[in-house]
Image (cartoon, rainbow, N blue to C red):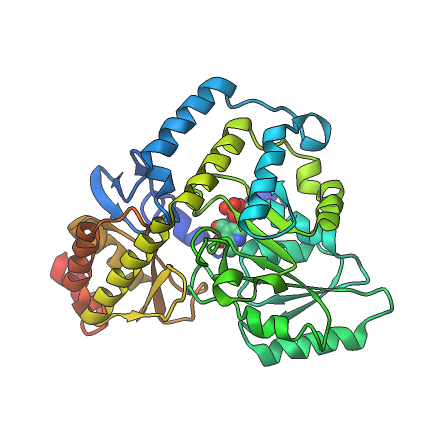
Length: 413
Ligand SMILES: Cc1ncc(COP(=O)(O)O)c(C=O)c1O
């Protein structure tokens, strides 16, 4: 059978949505300058779907700096992988500054978070080793696991007993040269709960292992100084490899992993997604340094982020919404219903209230539930939040389930 013909028969779990709601529910086009207010479908909307947590992406000083740097370097330089021709002092300075920021001895820059962490996991373990990971890990960890040669064990999300069981199993099956790598997230991006890092780290004494934490949502936002979820929980030292991406609080592209110098040395020679791929362009590197400096110098951005998060959550709860008890700024609202309800909520908020949110249904969340995820940022204003709460108030009759979706559709047809 022709491969392309066969693909028509298996659209994949998201295929149905990408063809039906293309441009609206999937691949929507948010246009105009990045910020809490953008244009969607020709209308201004307040955006609650982008991870620009600290408002760095719409900061005027950052934007002016980007312009200057792009003029000076163009987007091409440097060419080649870092190992060959793509290394510069700026790349190395950024690594030093990142290591300092997250309180680790050294750091290694990655050109993309997703491929970077996959390749780091692949490099760290061999066929004698064990890889233990949380079942709700981000797709990049799951794909990293597929690449890894190690034996793989999964534990129930944030379940310490299940984790200990898998650790014990790995130790029981270990050979003399076996090692154990555990991978979890600092702040889980869909549900907003934190990894149970303290409890996990406490088990190191009984069952030695090394811990890699993907803190994509925590870097810059969590901890007093923004150094992440480990700092927030008071157990940062127990994280052996700390992964952060620029794709969220830095509003950029690229990522890094911070750890001991000897491990960074190993990664530089073994992470295939870096060795065989082009280096991060100079304007991105310079801009990452600038953004890092600004994140460090403006702790009030984190305060504003939390202020906005609390105002949004309290307001939603007062209306009657079920906001999951998230411990990072990710604000998940859970309600009962089908894909139809999820789409109706998104459509009503966008069309009638100028509020852009994203929602997910089964298989991302259990059947019969709808998760609307809001990402507050430091750039949102009180007016943005109030307009959003007014929108949620206006749709509550059907979004909270007291009116059926069918009835609501008829009412608004
Ligand atoms: C938990 C987590 N890890 C890794 C990534 C991938 O990072 P990047 O977008 O920098 O490739 C993401 C991005 O969405 C994420 O949420």
